[in-house]
Image (cartoon, rainbow, N blue to C red; front, side, top):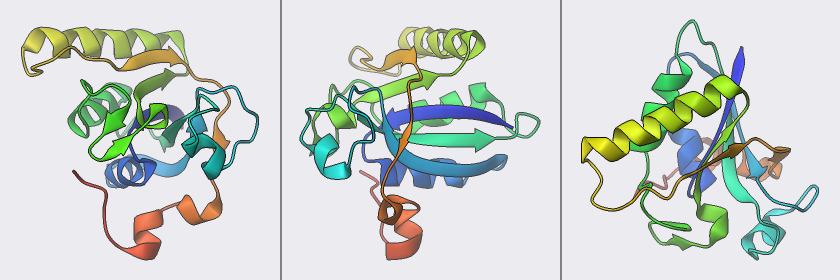
Length: 155
């Protein structure tokens, strides 16, 4: 089993996307990339903790590669929007790849360059590629939110 962490707007929708991928064994939503220990949703939403809403993906690399997960990440949101996705605004909704190894960093950087050169984006990609910091799991009611409540976050 391996781990990947992505931020691409509201973590409810991002989790939905990755949970549907064959080879993804588990997901959990939470907060990454900030400076406050064990932040709450309310604190993260204030924009003062520096965290992004993120999804930690546990996957079987014999079934789905990290590179395939990167492709899904790029396709699941607009990586040219700075600190927002759809109606959600704030640094907690930024686009980010939190890498867990040098190989993940290289794959993420190469995929970003490939996407930029492809001409698919009309604007500059603003996605951060940064080392994974402590992942703070969000409150239980956020986990698999749409399975519990119905609906979706698709923009």
